[in-house]
Image (cartoon, rainbow over all chains, first blue to last red; front, side):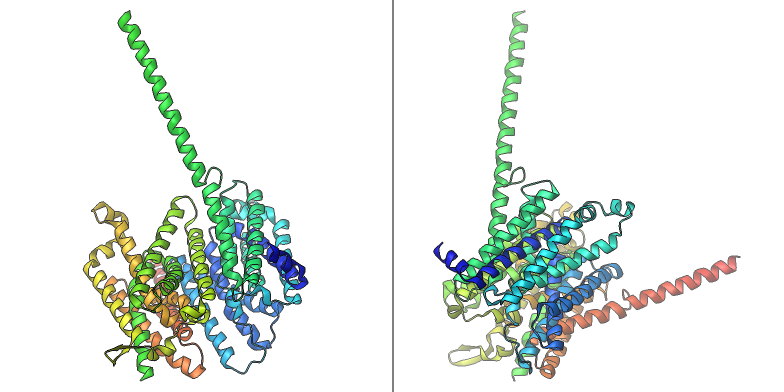
Length: 316
Length: 300
């Protein structure tokens, strides 16, 4: 525990710590919507697809700035979303194959560009490979600032458009009937996923950021049936994972932040699977035992009751 | 000579992944292939740490175990009510994270680094030779992939009919008494084997590309299963050659270039395939429209 306070005593680490918490919070919130819309793996694909966008943005400008990466990753994300939709609509391949194709070819392109940058004559490229698995401790003040602003922006948008996102998550047809532009809202949600990916690229890395979009949301689903509660819980789980990930990875040398954050989220998930009310394994076992007991009891009562009547009849 | 070994390794990867990939695409389980290729990671690292060698058999066994564990966990969470894609996402990210952490913590012992996980080491394949009694027998990776390919071909060949039925109509397969679950796990075992043997050469994420892209490409070119498998291998081998050429010209990652080449071949098939391509379908639609209007005009 003592090194937790030493970490907080360092002002830069303190900012990184709160920045990662905010990142976990915002991706947990967005992830709830993508989970309910059955698009969890789309987040994974968009995360991988962001890599070539980021590389191209770097190659064109030669600057490592989140703002420029955001533009590159957004464009790559739009192309990837369009590609997935186009392949599923215009061929006999199903969505899973389309996701796999887009994911791996974009990531392949990203790796090619990354090695191209490494072998090529680009100054200032050090640290670009940290984007794969993330290294929160290597972030500087302005990066943390941008990440925090983007995360706050995501949460704000979700709060403002809560009603609309709720509608398109559960009943897009009804949303259309009410006159909402469903296509636009869906695109916006995808865009928010891309923003979350880019915000997390330095802290968690493109390979595992998808887990922050998926795992907290799935865990939260175990605890509640209400969307509002689920989103708050998912955000809280995400923030907790971000905090634990940053703390542990900064206290052990050579440990990337992304995997640690993901494992923290997975631990929360396992606890939710075991302990969640109604859906959790423990709750289910207890319910089963209770039903079994009441069934046996009822049987017994019936049995004795009918037994009594039989006795009565023979006596009569 | 190094060119020859690299091309041979790449082609063997393409063949192993191409065969099992076809069944993954047909059973709509492409993303499970993605999940397995990530989650064999901890198996490989744990095998390294326990055995202390890069002995391929131990690694193969550990990876097989983790591949089946992944399949089992995904199925378990699905049955407990989590959406299928979310359960895939939860399981593979967790296992992959464990693998990356193990590599980071024990990097010195296992001679693996984070780059090798992602890019693979196909460029160095001819340096890691297998020697028997002082006589060099060629690169280890080639032997490993060769044995894997024979195993995959043998299993698929023996149970071809069963795999075919499970791929197209699992309900019918179950009805006539084929143990569908057993074949499901068998396929997943083969996918894990293909993944782990390719892992060292092309890296975790690009294995996915070799599993899914060539199989999807051949799915757009033919309607026959046997033909689809053959085409899938052919597309994989073609992308290996094209990708290796491109990587020399661009001085970039070989594995990345191979997957990009596969992606380009997919786009070509998507547009130009004679039976299912975008252009040929458009032409057919136009012809049909013209015929309909012509016959309509005649009728009037």
